[in-house]
Every structure is written in structure tokens, then in C-alpha cells.
Image 1 (tube, rainbow, N blue to C red):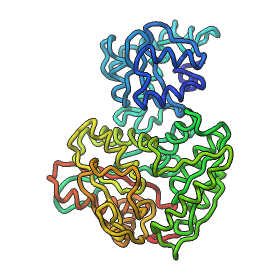
Image 2 (image 1 turned 90 degrees about the horizontal axis):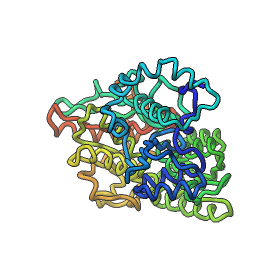
Image 3 (image 1 turned 45 degrees about the vertical axis):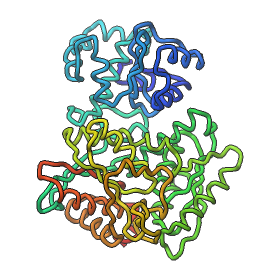
Image 4 (image 1 turned 30 degrees about the vertical axis):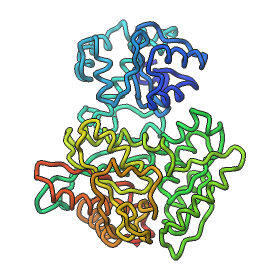
Length: 459
């Protein structure tokens, strides 16, 4: 079987222990050879050959680490680090250099005969290393494969999460000041950045036993997280019970149902998003989760969700040409702003991080709670995982301004998104106006406008 046709997950640490090891790596554990050996023995899986550099991929096929079984280290990495890590000792420091050095070998008759040999093992070191580089190259925006890696098929729909495009704003721009780039998270499978955190949250809960096989995930949601959880649960064989409200769009309700989610409603006060509504939804979901075989995701207090956005920050940095001066993001749960910012600050510690909240409910700024109409942000109270020390400034944007900007984005830039994205652009324009022309401001188009057709600003 040609290497290109082998499932990606088979190239490194296959079996039930893989996700546990991935979770441990991301948590900073199992960072020694002895720890790695113990994890293999616990899972009853064969130990790699001594000296093997093995790539660990998660259940979606994303490479997360390189293991050296004779060293005393597990290399945690972003995609660029992977190319360097595997190149050490061979004189290669980039994907291009590695591929050039091995091109003749891969086209040789010897390799072709080996690949056709029924006795050929898929855990051969050369194949593992080759597939790892193939993954990196596919995710490198500067590679021939393009952003997201269109050259090679993904190992299922969860493998299509991430690697979304970054675009520059051309017509909506400050009269003077920095350039603004926007990460188009609508390119994720459900059309939202929440796919990132949903995959991470479910994977981590399954890995450590909180979510039993075939169990039911329970969550309160304004719809976007619910849709992403519904997708992941459908793919991985879990049930989903969400607590929702009439304060949010009908499109979201219909989409969650399409993925098989069960929905319990909490009535709003004339469609307004308030602290009282959100807290009642939280309490309702917690009660439902007490049933046997149920697990409460509790997104507001779930630290796994923050890790789901690390890749987002690394992608923005690479796609922006390794220059981001300011990062602007709206705050709902605070997962995305803190996760992406943490990754950006690995590249540039002094990058400015600007939070965005509804002007009508500016609780992060110390103001009173209130009602607003910007779905996906401003829950009316301080999110449990909000860390003010990680933010340099807070911008307040009114519902009206956010709605107006969402319409402008569609009509002038061709970016069809919701009102939280509109709020991000309003704030990004303010930030860009205070910076020099050579600076770069990055922000996020959180999701697609298709899920807001029945609501303002599009109805």
C-alpha cells in the first residue's frame, strides 16, 4: 500500500493509549524516557525501537510531539518546530530541505518494492518521519500544498479543523495606521472557531475517563459551541444534550438538531442576552448532567478548551509573516483570547492583547451587567477563566456598531460573519489607528453569517 494511502493515525502510537499520551504531553507530563516507557507498558503496546524518533499524532491526525526513546525528552511543538526537531542529526532544518534530500530515495525501485511487500510494517521509522513531514508541509501556508494542506486527504472530518485562511482587509481600513488581518474561522467544518475547542474538550475528557464510551455530553450553549460539540460527538460516537434559548438564532437550533443533538430550552426575556439567562442555562445543564453516563462539559470552567486555541495563535503568527503587533478578540468564555494570545506570545512576548466586550454589558471593564444583542460574547458576568493579567486593553463596542460592521464586512470585503466578528473589526480599527503603518493587527472572523440569517443584522 502506498504511504499516502495509510491512515495518518497509524504512523505513530496507534491504539487506546495514544490520546492519553497526547493529553499528557500537552499538559507537560511524561517528558522523560522513563515516563514514556511507563505509558507504553500501561497500555500494553509495543515499545518503539531504541533510538527511534517517533511522531505522536492526536486522534484528528495532528502531530503534537516527537518522542526520542533514547534521549530524555519529548519535544513539544508547533508545526514549524516539528520540521526542525526531525531534521536534527541529519542536517535538515526545513521541510523543503528534507524532501529534497530524500526525493531520490522515495522514488527508488527499492522503496516501491518494500511498500508492496505484505510483510512491510507501517511503524517503520522512515515512513513515520516521512508522514510527519507530509503533515507539516500540508499545514505550512507557504508550501505548495497551500493553507490547510489540500494536497492530501484528511483522516476524517475532524482532521479538517484548523489551518484556516488569514486575509487582509482592503476596503475597511483606518485612514492611517496599521494593517488588519482577519482569520477566517468559518473555514472550519461547522463554520466556526469553536470546532477547535470542541475537539480538544471531548478528546481530553475521553482520554482521562470523565466521558465514558458512548456517553452523553451535556452543555449550555448560545449555539456555536453546541454545534461544534454536536459535530465532534457525531463523529466520535457520543450523544449530546444541550441547553439553549430563544435568545439565539433559529439556524443554530436547526444545525444542532441536524447533528443529532437533544435540546432543552430556557426562555429569555424578549430575546435579550442577560446574566440571569446564562446562569439559568448553566444550572439547568448541570442538573441534567447528574444522570448516569452523562458528562458536563461546563465550558466556562473547562481548562482543556484554552488548549484548543493554541494552534490558532501559531497559525496567525506564521500566516501574518511572523509579524503581529496586536491581537484583538471578543470575550465570551475567554478561551480563545487566552489560548491564541499564549501562542502568539511564544513568538513575541510583547504582543498587545486587546479584549472586546459589549458596551451595554461592560463587566470586564468594571461596569454593570446589562442586556445586549451580540451573540457569542458578553455573558453578563466575569468568566471563571478570565485572566486580566493576560490582556493589555479592553475595547467596548455597542450592539448597533457591531451589527453595522457585520453588514459592512459582507458588503465591502465579502466576509460574511456574525455580530461578534463585527465587534472585533470595530475594535481592530481603533487599535490599528493608534499604531504605525508597518504594524499588523490580527483579529478573528469567529463564524459564518449563515447561522444568523434570521436575526439582526441580516433579517
